[in-house]
Length: 125
Image 1 (cartoon, one colour):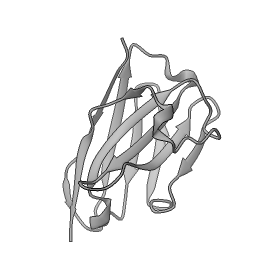
Image 2 (tube, one colour):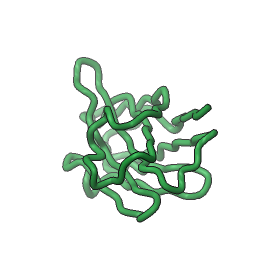
Image 3 (spheres, helix red, strand yellow):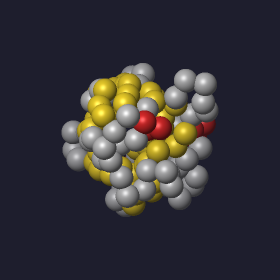
């Protein structure tokens, strides 16, 4: 059984940084796409960033490019959030699947079978 779990969410002031982590179990990530999405109350879920673990290719939403960094090591996936803004406040979700590559529209959430329960990020001004 595949399990996905995020951690690292917190309340920070604008301009601050956070490091979100995503761990999986029951799942070989070596050929996976690992992605982060976020959803604020009343808003649709948004893609944030993704990494294709096989190639190391990364991709970012325009709104976070230059501020967020996604990386992967053996143990976990990490999303490093810098220069945070109040509009970054949301529940952040880790998602993963092995059935496609990052160039196959990683930003479409329906493609992912496995999701974590989310971790909350609150950025105050």
